[in-house]
Image (tube, rainbow, N blue to C red; front, top):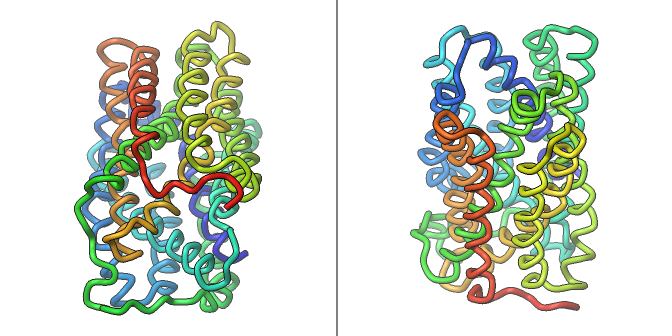
Length: 378
């Protein structure tokens, strides 16, 4: 439960932030291209810090690093709403990227260790908790916007509450998470360059991460700017995306053994492309919201499946395989949205979404070539 709520804490702040991107965009008078460039701060921070995360975990302890990065993440997400300069926004998002990188490796390692030591499948449920946090964060923000609350004030308040909850409520329980010893502690958590099956997983994970990042950073902007939705209505696109993803992930620990990992990855790619086409072809607000709802359901199980598979690829220490997958696959989640902004500046936001659909469809070629995927009823 404590690990699951750590996942939820991350996405609660993330979910609130993404619904406020249009507010920050208007406040700083940014074009789509300028916003896209500012958003590059987060992936750059992630790329720098993610390879270091395994060493930090080994040096300072899994639980300590997970708690520290969670607190830093909560505080950092408040700062973009107080800045008045796009370059300061870039720097703040850079720090957020570093915090999220360490937290991402830490909390997924916690879930993996529990599965290994206790023999319980919880990875998909933990990712479901992540989606639940996104739903609550987006819904909370939409409600606050409707009531006329000033975003910087209510986001600061929830960050303070979250920090106290993490330190005084979650930390005592997270200390019970088992630390798995490695035969060679000097190399057990080292970062590794991707190759073979792990590289194919990264390509697939980057594509689904790109779809997820699209929903996080651009769903509200698309519904607001392209379909003319009010800010509080535009926030519903991400809320519906997160809700359908949450429901699918909570069912994932039953669905994955029932249908097998490979079949569900095929479903992920095909359904994601169809969902994006629904968004692109939408002529009314409700159709755009429906498309994001379907997109969340489509890509929900990719992350829990691929995180688990990356941890059991032969030739890598458990921490190295997971950290390598997390680093490179998360590029799609964070680098993709800024690139969409640059494409939107030149060709329109719908064209950026169409490119994402094409790249996602191409990754269907990776699915039959990935080894170590478990079949049904394992």
